[in-house]
Length: 189
Image (cartoon, rainbow, N blue to C red; front, side, top):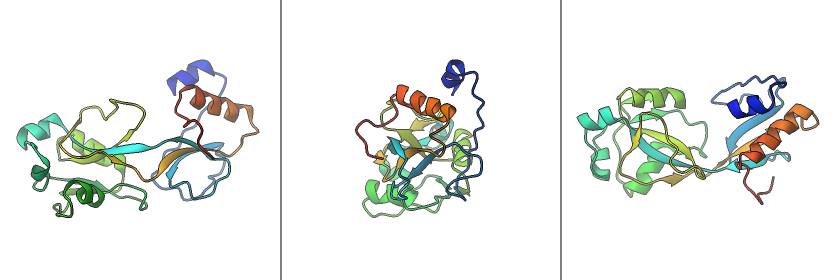
């Protein structure tokens, strides 16, 4: 957003981040970035990108609990976060792909928000599932490294949902996203 602010200092931004969207169109919002299957039939939705989910841990945790292969994950401290729907990849999804049906231990730590789970992993409490944008190779979370195992493509995607497309400021933000090459070309609404 720093780049957008440099290009458009005249546009005031208010960013509201929440894990669950209580209302489809929150009061006063001009634009949403939403994750989902795309089946919520928002006609103005613009697909931004898919994601891949990777299991990651801090180097400190891995020094104390080496993870050399997928089997080592079955005895590791997992960190789980609440997933608001089946479009979100969970530890059971990861186990189904990585372990072909073998079970993982009950998470050692469960939190309600993704952000809190990432912080716990950065602090060395265990392994967390991290969401990365597919077209941004090398992106991850600072202080975390991937462990052995699959990258799972998310079943949903991230969408830009303009609620006030008639406003010049909203159009400027959509144009900025398009200039960042994050809007998936040739994707339908």
